[in-house]
Structure formats: structure tokens, C-alpha cells
Length: 367
Image (cartoon, rainbow, N blue to C red; front, side, top):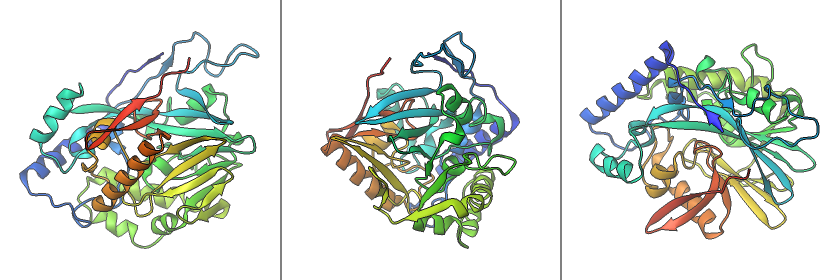
């Protein structure tokens, strides 16, 4: 349904070199998974900026145009499904490539990782996506997280990122009533504000976990990011996103306690560790439940088959592992359909127990 072409650019090349230089450096010196030795205020997945995705709908229709009265087919950067009586749509914010090690796996050796990649037909560098969720409850239109926005220029999240794919799905930014944020990393808050400083969703109210907001608008995050071992592009992007994108939405935001109700049928689920107060989001309609896992799990293989493996961006790796296992156990036990923010599009499916860990069962595509 979608053709993807990647083209290189200077900034992307710099990010890629930084990643591989970082990996070499980590191989040559011991790494201790402590709060001080790990990047405690990570950007999510900014390495996805290595390429410019060119996603082209298979349909011959012009972008945003469809026959009068016709329901668009899934594809072309969006995917519709149901959560009970709620209408849900996954919107692609684009895709790019990152090295699995050390970005998604920093605490396993090459010897440990290699057989896992081979068994799962994976290469050392893989495609990663940002997947934005829109849910129509019948009373409100809710958008969860906002992607990179224009923070990485044309490389990721611009064309044909969130704005273009929202248009393809027939969803205007002005129609969004509520923007819910899972946590304050660059690839989750980068799209709140345009490059010109205007609100990307001008009529929306914004919702954050109160302690997560306090951290990213407080006095600690900048020095902690700057003192971290991460490459400079990550530090700059993380600090810039918090500094530039949060103040403009402050007067239109409300702040919820961990586990609190966001709106009818929508709750935060506490899952700290990836960021100080990272949260998943649970949707309930009738007998159906659906959990947006945020960044509890970054990849179906590295995060589920090996939940003890840590991505380099976890603020507190030990706490993140604990939260990961708690959420994965819950959704597997209760057979809750889930979404992985960085999983292969459309990123929805089920988590099943397998041996001492878990396995990803992608939902069957609805045509």
C-alpha cells in the first residue's frame, strides 16, 4: 500500500555517525546501568532522522481527495479500527532508520544480540516509526502524542508526516479537542507547536501527567541532559523541545495524577522509568479495552522477547524494566489490544506470553 524511499542528508549523516561512534565508545569501556550513567532525559528516537521518508498512497487520487460519500481505505499513512464504540485511527508520523545497538539495546553484547536478530530476520539497522493515535469517543476527538513535528526539519515528521497523513485521513488539526501526552520526550511533544510558534492544534486542550510536566518545565532537566553521555544532537533536541513547545500550551493545559481519569473512558496508567513520570493510556468502551503503551516497549523483538534489555533513552533503566514487565504482564493476562508507539505501522496487536518473556501478535489488517 505504501512505497518508502529514503534519501540521505547532512544532518542525518551526523546523527548516524554519532550513534555508531557512541556504540564504539560503549564497546571499548564498561557501561554500568545506573541513573547517572544512562541518558536520563532522552529524546525518544531522534536517530530516526537518518532518512527522508517518501510515502506515496497506492491510490491514484490526489492527496486528501476521495469520491464524495466514499469511506477511504486503510493505507496511505493512516489506519482505522474500533475500540468498542470508539472510532480509532493510527496516523503515521513517518519513519527512519536506527542502529539497534546501542540505541534500542544498550545492555547486551553483540554476541548476545546477533542470534536474536538472526532468529527474527532482523538487520543491525532497522526502520522505526512514530505512530500517533486519534480516538473519536463520540463526545471528543483525542490525539495521543504529537510526533517530531518540525523539530528535525524535513528528515522526519514533516513531509509526509503527521499533518499530511491527518489530512489523508480526513482529520483537520482544528478538529482535535484533546491532546494527551504520554511523556515529554522530543518525539512525543515535538509536534505541539509549529516552527513559527503557533499551536499545531489550535482549538485543543492539552493534558499531561502533573509530575512529568513539572520535570520538563523545571530547573533540573537542562543540566541533566547536558551532563549526559548522549551525542550533542540529542541533547539539543531534547532541551529545545521542552523549552520551545511546553510554555505555549501551558495556559491551555490541565494536569492529571498518575492513574487518574483524563476524560470519560480514558485513564493514565503509571509506567515510570523511561522518563520520570512516563505513562501509558488506557481506553475503555463497553467491554473493549485498548492500551497505548507509549514507550514502555520500543520494538516487538528487543522489548518483548527480552524485556530486560534497555534502550539508551531510559531515564531510570531499573524502574523502566519493572514498569515494562508490569504493563506487559497486565495486557497479556487481560488480553488487551495494545499499540506500540514505535512498532511497525499500524502498530496494534496483542502481547502473548512465550516461555519466560513475551511475543508480539500483530492485529490482522482491516481492508
